[in-house]
Length: 70
Image 1 (cartoon, helix red, strand yellow):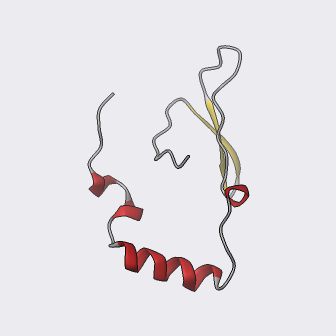
Image 2: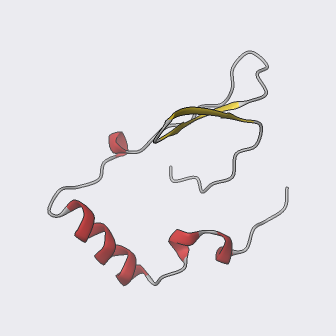
């Protein structure tokens, strides 16, 4: 597995203060909980594709790049 540079991930391009300010501008005084985040599970039964939620519905991909949050 090849490691990706931080520059690859748009969310990591700004310092933490800018990221926090952007989040506050978007959600106001609400909080983000684990239930607000999309979940992508490991393909079952020998499946080779990931089912990824998108704004247009679900998408099927053979490869998944991302950051593990928890």
